[in-house]
Image 1: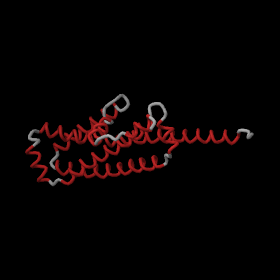
Image 2: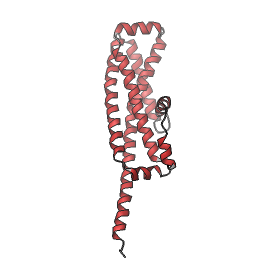
Image 3: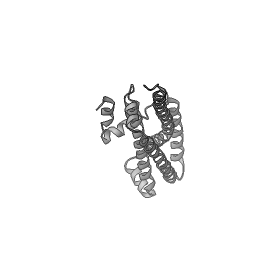
Image 4: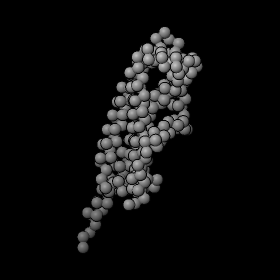
Length: 202
């Protein structure tokens, strides 16, 4: 099996999948403005929600909304993943896998990471949305006995959720890049056929 295909054949463990997926959220030069903006918005919302009279209701309502958003994003990412990679035949798989840096492996891993991120965020929001007011108060009393701890926990949930929503930008970007790479590969194949047909026959 060629090296490119051997790399693709390696299956990551569930722990590696989650770890690699969360690494997509790491602030880097390209997404630093988004990370800063998300952090600022999350901090303001966290403080406002905790200072409101209906804090629990606000948290549950927000988690319910985010749950629906992440379910939709998961469906979109899964559809893109299934459609694009079902179009690849053996020749195109070998063509992409044999290019420098193995772009096919990079595309596969990114879509896998995106699916894991949306699934994790959906599960977290689902669990929060299912909690009733009494349960949240009990959990708050046991775990978050300090206002600043409550603010930190709320901030982390909001920052993680909003940052994963912003990952839609990268999902679209990688979709566009993959589409262009696939079109170029198909175009080269068509040119090869054209030259073969135009060649003088002996």
